[in-house]
Amino acid sequence: MKEINILFTCAGRRNYLINYFKEALKGEGNVIAVDEQMIAPAMYDADIAIKVPSIYAANYIEELLKIVTAHSISAVISLNDLELPILSKCKELFKNQGAQVIISNSDIIDTCFDKWKTYNFIKELGLNTPKSYIKLDEAIEDIEKGELEFPIVLKPRWGSGSIGLDFPETIEELKLSYLRQKLVLQKSQLNRINKVDPIFDIIIQEKVTGNEFGIDVINDFNGNYFGTFSKQKLAMRSGETDKAKSIIDKQFEKLGKEISKNLKHIGIVDCDVFVVDNQLYLLEINPRFGGGYPFTHEAGLNLAAIYIAWLKGDGNESLLKYNNYKENLIFSKCDRLMQMGN
Image (cartoon, rainbow, N blue to C red; front, side):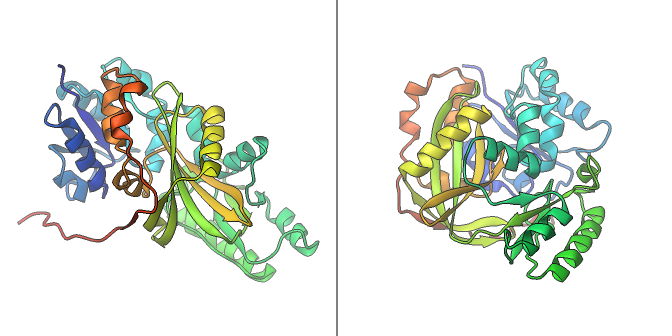
């Protein structure tokens, strides 16, 4: 049997994913991690760690392709929102070297990464989502007409994590927050992306209150639906799920199937959902492993093993042993200290 070697790009702090895939490989391949910093924590858990240039460097893709060839890479998985648009445009280059980039196509990445396009995608499906605006004057007009109420949410149109998130409570505060966020974006790592449309680079959104959930919607590598795995978010930290409880609910299954059928994504998407008066409101769709995936994994869905099975050509009927998802299991993340050198 040919070895399955997995390349994780922008490895960062995702040690758990490195280890999930190492366990699933059972010695029949290696996990290679790359990052522009050798002291990125996940590099220390990988079988092989390699320093690479910034994702925006002119030779970044060239360096990745060298690694693909040198280490007989079977699949490439990105762990960075900002890298997804870059890699999605280069999938054929990697395919020609024998490696599958497990990322959706560029149009899907664009729909998910651009929050304004995400909003319109959700509305076109007829699903509930918070009322959103891309023009400040239109939001203010609806506030004055009583059609939008404070507090509201301000966030970057192309965002990652909790960068630039604000909750103004008056029109004056809204205007100040809007200007402040413009300045913050100019100085942040999101500035490169916001140049796509620098005038309309902020989303103004109705703030919904209710219980918050995360759902992982899984498609196979041909975009066919595999399953929906849900958890209630009990606590957040730095924009990521910190504590969560696994749930099994037909409402979320129905929503996941609707997303899968219309998005036709590849692999996993991580979605944010609020439940308000027993109605589901879909907020965001992140086309990659999210910070909430460990809760899904620990509750019984071994997506690492499923990915490896798909790479080997196994059909879905043989994967039931990797899906033992159980409800009402509560998990919490915690910190650990790693020595990064002498």
